[in-house]
Image (cartoon, rainbow, N blue to C red):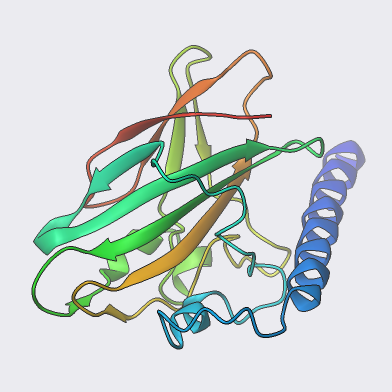
Length: 193
């Protein structure tokens, strides 16, 4: 029993350390980047320390995958980076291809009680490793907040919002995973790193 508690506590401390590192990294990048294309769009990132990262890092011109949602809402995946700490960070952009503003569906947060209480997020996202026959869920910090973009509400026609999701990394020999998000089509993405 004490081994289980210790392992759980250790995982919590690792998540807390990652969250703190992300917060420090974002604070260091905070100046004025001069990107006025989406005013206040970056405010849609989490208000909690640790859930806010720069979704533009590692972005390429051609998305790794494009998941289609309802009413012209698209999720373009721009990177899926494995780090040495055993985490996989998926970055992307929400895009409203429709002609009217859209409310970001609250179902994207999933239905787990621990995640639901922290508001709208991408906490319902999962990665499927077909090769290893495993499904990976979005990581959470020690307070149960999902390590994804949170606080999403509406997106205007033609607007883009950078988003991210962090998962446990699949084994090193797994290079392709399928990203699933409620109300969106699935998409296969290639992991780098």
